[in-house]
Length: 303
Image (cartoon, rainbow, N blue to C red; front, side, top):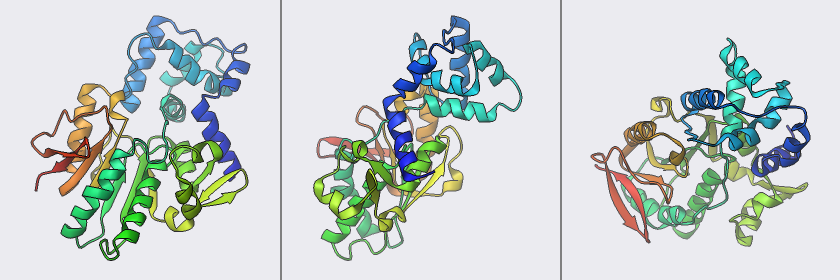
């Protein structure tokens, strides 16, 4: 897939592909009966942990109209029938991708990156002699892990010798198409306008066609891998910092608690968990302690 195609895909996902949905609306019947909606909600929660709640049929219709047209489903019941059949794994994955919210921007909410720069990096630089490991969960098209890489680079510029090695940064997401965009490191003008200073644009990006490409040095510092947060993380190893922001709000309480417990277990002693501004710790309270900094809160694993 070319950089231009990746940019077009990102714009389409961000805007909801309104034009495509409208053009296909006459060809497919996306009306959802109550029993069909309940069956679909059960599937989505089992597959991804996403909980839709009541009366969100409009959301399902808007997210799946394009996919239904692509697969040739004339009615929503046809999609459910295909899901029930054997060999529907590929379809299920496409549905989960379509229903996943991929809203993201550079240095989103700013506070987590200030904490990284002002608290976490200085503390870990003193206590760690080996390479730091940082995980950005549900990273969508990659702006968060790349923002982390920029913060680390800026910290090393301002504090020579403080971090002896580049941190090992991992970005994970359930969506393969979003990970393809992240790996490319190519962003259109809309994405570039959200959260980046002119200085960072000049220092870390190069103009490319109708967008900008992240410099190779930074792209090489971030690895990407597909991961469903409902599954085990044991194979990922231990991390010094985990960013898991603005995603837990979509999970049922039981799943949310399980995710937090597994993430706490994935932290090295003294490591930090960074959640979204509207999210709070509901599990692993005996393992993680609250740390206030700059008007916000992060969580540190007890030594």
